Length: 515
Image (tube, rainbow, N blue to C red; front, top):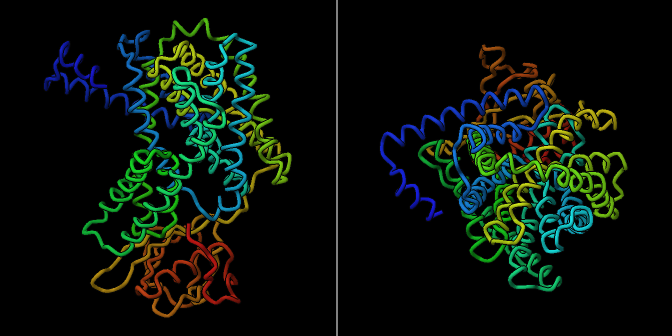
């Protein structure tokens, strides 16, 4: 990275005019990427392919922008992955993934091991890679990508257990795969026994888990008790805590990627003030990270060098998609007795995205023999098999009858602390699939100290009566004292999930856990 910066200063000093040119190019790329998001939504293609295409278009074989710094790509790629994992964790509902965590953890560890072994064997015997190189290849392509999976499944409601498994697996498996690729890339110079590698992976995962839990819990405790002077500071504070978890975990010789994901899950489920604003800020930052990352990866590749690796990449990709992924799913889920239809979708939903291409830069930086070929193979594999799997995932989900269109959606609640008044202002949005539809205000049975003060319906606002019937699409303004704020939010979520009779025996619906 330093050498690249020095080269830029020596050959083309950073002047105001050059800065303006860079800003012009960057803004054009971002605007084109926004159009690409819309196109990917309509076609069902993961947007990563379009971003990669933008990078290739402005690269060496396109507009001629020369870029070949694998080390800089790896550094920026790690930073982008931190933002992407943070956003994924903040948007993860612990209620939805809680039951799926054991299965997802098995897929992220046992499944990764099975996949690495099968892909490495295929790469060695089918395309002639040396065993060390083949193992690195197998490890690089063993991580699934949440952004790629859910960009094509966003219109297909799935059962919570299946959605939770896919979401948790994609958040968990980055950590062991990164550790494995780094260890295997160093093994060429310093050979290690398999049990040493396993021990290293387990230790780093435990350290990362501890760092994520510690920073997440302490951060949530502080943010719930410190009223910041501006609502815009909450998203910055939350993202800073996620980055702190990553850096702390990595510096403690643990898995920073697991730390940032766990920290984000804790914060995202901690009922922090201004949660929708935090989610919106993180979502925008993650989009920016994805765009920059994929464009950079597209710049790094040289398209005319990929021709010779086209057939080998297809062979390895077929082994990964048709053998390694299904076998790893079956083996990992043996103790959980998951239905075959869900296993079939999980097998086909193993989309590869940013992580494998970023990981392919690690052996390049470590100067592993054959590392440039690994990068080319991974690039071709990701593009071709995402094109094949992405558009067919919604179709497969429907064919397997795994849709869940009637599942109730949680109400969206945003909390703003009123420090001087010792209270909270809750903004509640009732989504389309919410069982709060048809419930009267009095049937909400909010705890004493909380009241619905305003209803906004179809652009008009009014003060509700106890007999006012709520509808889908309504926005409510609820005022609650500090003492009953949590109970009020739990009750609103319970009614949204179960209707007017929710929590009847329990009174306040205290068993409900906010997202």
